[in-house]
Length: 348
Image 1 (cartoon, rainbow, N blue to C red):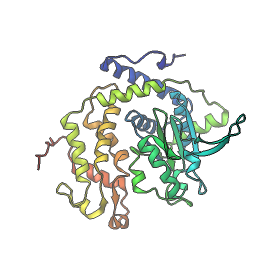
Image 2 (cartoon, rainbow, N blue to C red; image 1 turned 90 degrees about the horizontal axis):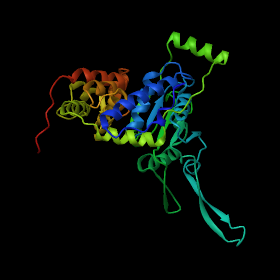
Image 3 (tube, rainbow, N blue to C red; image 1 turned 135 degrees about the vertical axis):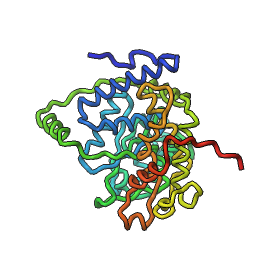
Image 4 (cartoon, rainbow, N blue to C red; image 1 turned 60 degrees about the vertical axis):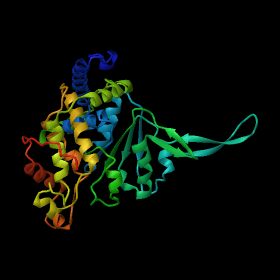
């Protein structure tokens, strides 16, 4: 059996560290394949999110192994893992924790003590996050953005690294609340989990019904994730890649000089600066996974939909024409040539 990649320290040399990361990624895919059939693109996008230091939203119908993907990934990464099942009666303190009164058994003095909630974990699975009302959804915002929780006038730091991988059911399902735009923007990527292919579904049925589920061995540790996050930050990005990501984001905003006519006609709002930062940081993370110490335009293309689909909203005209965010992004990609040289704008 292959020894865990975490047995060996990440090399100090950045180029060697990239090769180390590629090997770790290959081992992770092998481990995940023991229990997950297919969904390789979903795994890639989740790992890109983690290396880029963000959170991901997994969207798909019930029964597509979204929860299994996240829990299996926690095993393969040897991270502390907690799961919150979001329900309509869930309270904010059920997530973050609360101050409780505790009596000292010797002095009988009473004092407040903070009891941490399930958010205090390296990897938090927020299952069916859109089944709970907006007030409780908002309780996640500070934790996701600030990596801390406020209770009793004090701030409590969350463990590092900290990731939220949330799942949601399609909005047309009963009992689903749309996530607020501010919370959607906190997610680095919005990942769609689709139905398996015919051969994959056959293999799923064969494995599960015959009890042939494998056991996952850890391949990375928390310290490895932190080191790889630093490596992503140091990874260079060329003006060509930055320019293409910049052009995509600028073109997505109605009323801007760079916007194509279809954007003015069908888009309610486009991606903000966080969308541009997401495209660049995730492109660098994807390059690292595949053993390259530089991001390319192809990396931006591969991540355009998960990075932008929750940051571009169609207006009523788009809804009347049954245009989804993904279809608007397809039009945006077609209108923004990847081989064009986009120059830095002059200072105003």
